[in-house]
Image (cartoon, rainbow, N blue to C red):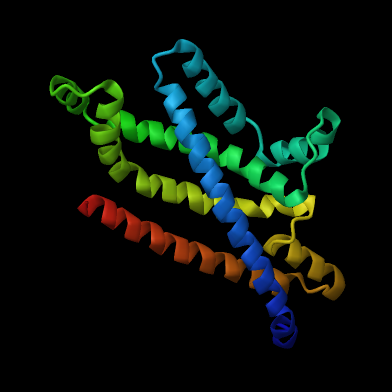
Length: 215
């Protein structure tokens, strides 16, 4: 173990970790938006929307995320979509994790007892009001932990943007391996920083889960 080398390159890995965090946050927000829209489509009364939602989930979950990124970044210019590497990473990973979040959100909503909706409708609430005021608050208690699992998977999945040259943790490790020939040390640093990010995120999700359940 070359500890002197690890200490020398550590500041550069910290900068890369900030990029990983930024990428994770933006991707998670986009994924949540896609998941909410996807779940709404899958639960819609309109068969066309249900078909679109099911097609989105099946297509995205049935193909590798790396292929999706390559299609967007390398294939996009052929159809007029010109994106920088970071934007392509956010959009590609966000749309990908959104398909998984779609099923998480839909599952939580479906798990709420239908009697709750019927009772709300009996009290004069519209279908949308019943969903917003009765079903979704109860579903939120069921979806926080599964969404946290999705986000943890997303953070680890940010390593997939390394091949399109986003300077995050994995790309930084690969770059320094090329100049130092010390793969063990470089991946030890990046792995440790991934663990710290996921540890902090996990505690944040646990705190949010407690708050939602108390509310």
